[in-house]
Image (cartoon, rainbow, N blue to C red; front, side, top):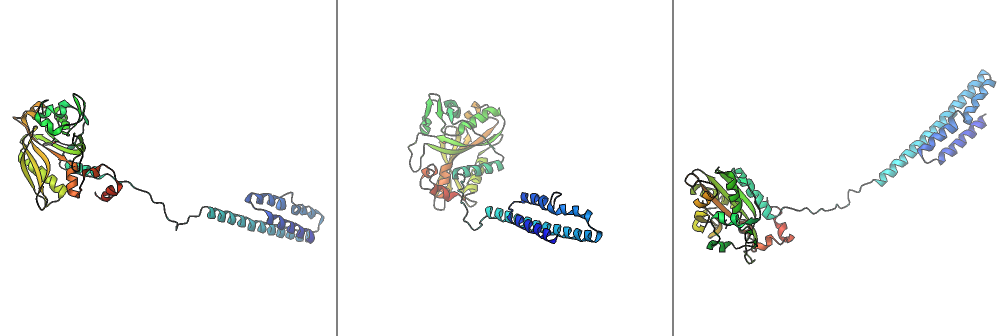
Length: 332
Ligand code: PHE
C-alpha cells in the first residue's frame, strides 16, 4: 500500500512540475484527487479491512491528499507570480526617459492687445460691435459726411469691389450702423476690426491694419468727457505716468476734431484721432443734435503697439516670423 501511494505522489509531482497555466490545475486536481482518481479508488478497500487497518489507510489517504493539494497550491502560486512578473515587465514605465516636448501656440500680439482693450472698455460700460469688412460707399463715406466728391476721400482711398462696394477704410461704418439701429437712444460702443487703405506698404504703412474706434452719444456729452476718456486709454496702455496733448485737426465726421499725442519722455508722439461727432452725422442717423451730442475716437492699433514695444517695422506684425512672435508670448 505504501508503495502504491508513493507511486501516486511521484506521478503527481511529475505532472505538477510540467504544468504552466492556471487552467491545467483543475484538470490535475480531478485527476489526482477526484472521484475517479487512483487515490480515491483506494477507499474501496475499506470494506475489506478491519477497523484498525481501516484507520491506518484513512490516515494515509488523507495525508497523501493533503500532500498533493499542497504541491498544487505551490504550483498555483508559482504560476500566478510568473504571470504578474511578465505583466509588470511588459507594462513597465521608465520614468527616467526624456519626455516629448509639445509646441504650444499663443495668441498674436495684436489679438492680445485688442482683447485687453475690450476688457478695459467693457469695464467702462462700453459694448463691443462689429460689422462687414466689405462695406457700402453709403456707410463708409456718405453717412459720415463724406459725399461722393468730397476731397477728404483722398485720405482714405481704398479697394473697390464695384462703384458702391469697397473694403472699409475705417470701422466708423459700424458706428453708423449702430446709430441707425439705436433710434435716438444713448450709445457707448467700441468697434475693433480690420480696415483697408490703398497705401504703399512700407515700414510704417500697410494696406490692411487694425482699428478700434469708439463712439459715445447722449445728452450733455462734451469735450471734457472725450479728453478724460482719451487720457484713461493712454494711461491704461502706456502707463499711469503718461500725459496727453490735444491738437486741432480735421475729420469730416467730427467738429471740433483733435489729434492726440502722448509725451514719451523726449517729445510728443502722435497717437490717434478724435472729436465731437459732427451735428450732420448725428442728424443723418436719426439723432437730434439740438438735444444730444457725442464724441468719437479712432485708434490705429499697430501704431500704438509699435510705439509701446519699440517695433521698427509694421510688417513684423503680419509676416508671422516665429522669432518675432515668440518674443511676445509673455505679454498678457
Ligand atoms: N475714422 C477715422 C480714421 O479712420 C478716425 C477717427 C474716428 C477720427 C473718430 C475721429 C473720430 O481715420
